[in-house]
Length: 349
Image (cartoon, rainbow, N blue to C red; front, side, top):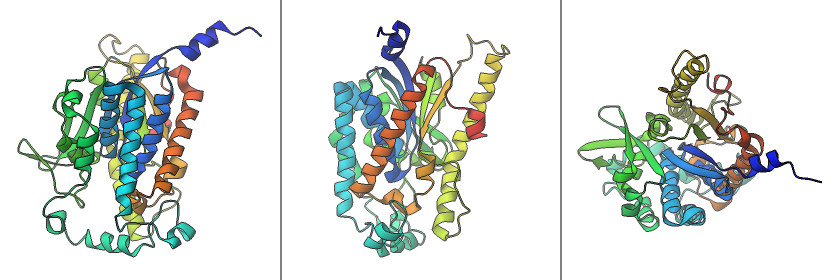
C-alpha cells in the first residue's frame, strides 16, 4: 500500500509550542510525565516556558537541560530531581501509612499521625518559629542540577518563572538572564512552610496566588502562537468538601485557578475579535490554547497527597502524565499552529 504523502508530511512536520506549567507540590510529578513524553516526540520544539511553584522547578530544569544537552539531558535531569524528592521523602515523617494505602484515596496520608499533627501545628506556628534558619532542602539540589550562569545566558529557550510580592500583591516575572535558585524557591514558597525569600529588598510567596501560571509572558515575549497549559489543579470536583482539610484544599485550588481562568477569558475575548476581523491581526497576536490535564484523577486526590513523595505515588502521577500527553499528541497534534484544541468557553467559563 502506498503511503499518503500529505499524511506523512503532517506526521513528520516539526511544530513549536510554548509551555505553561502549573504548581501543586508533589502533584508536579504529573507535569514531569507530560514533559518526559513531549521530549520523546522529535516533532515538538519548545520555544518558551512559563512556570509557577512546582511548575517553576520543572520549567527551570527543563530549560537548562535543553540548553545544556538537549532532550536526553532534560529528561535525565527531571528524573534525577523527582528521584531526589522521593529519596528525601523517605527520611521525612510524612509517609502514607498501611491504612492510607488500604482505605484512603490514591496518594492520601490522611491516616498519618505525623501529617495530622503537622496540619494542626502549621496553622498555629509559622516557619519563622519552627524553621528559624529557613532550611530548604531544595536549594542544594537545584544548584547541583542547574548551572545557573549557563541558564542565564540561554537564548534558544525563553524561561519565565513567577512569584507573588508579599507586600504589594503584584505578580513578579523573572526571566532567564536573572534567574537564581532563590527566585525558583520564591516561586514555590508556600508561606506556611517556608519564610518569604528576599530578592532586591522585596519579599515573595508562591506565584500561584497571582498566576498559576500566567500566560502573558510567553504571549508577549515569543514568536510562537501556541500555548500548551499543563494543568494540575482540577477546575471541577465531584462533591462538596465536608472535612476541614478538604474545604481548605478546595479554597486553595479555587484561589490558584482564579487568575488562570480570568486570563483565559481575556484571551478568548481578544481571539474572538481577531477572528471576526474587528481587531488587526498584524497588531494583536492570535493565540492558540491547548491543555493537558487529568481532571478525573486529580479531583480525587487529597490535600495531604501534595506532600506525598513516595515513589509509588510519584510514578503513578508520572505515568498518568505520559498517558495524557500521548492522547493529546494523537488527537490534537495537527491542530498545533492552526487553531486552539481547547474550547476555552466550555473549559474556563
